[in-house]
Image 1 (tube, one colour):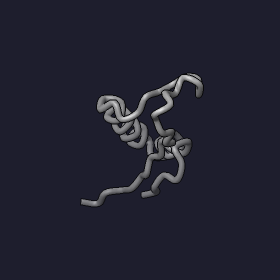
Image 2 (cartoon, helix red, strand yellow):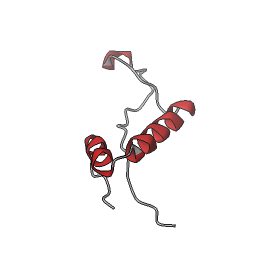
Image 3 (cartoon, helix red, strand yellow):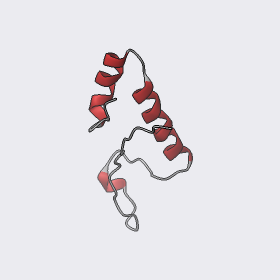
Image 4 (cartoon, helix red, strand yellow):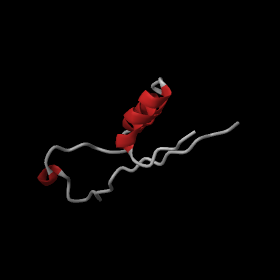
Length: 66
């Protein structure tokens, strides 16, 4: 099984595997992040409050064999 290197590769792997497993996993993680208000999303960099620190979002993918 191949592990994603970048998010843009997920649809390609799902197409090759004939499923939507990587897409579902990514959606699940993103939804959990949003539900816990981990980040705020701003449309314009000038809208970022002065006391906040900008941290880019990065997903790390792995396969679990259990």
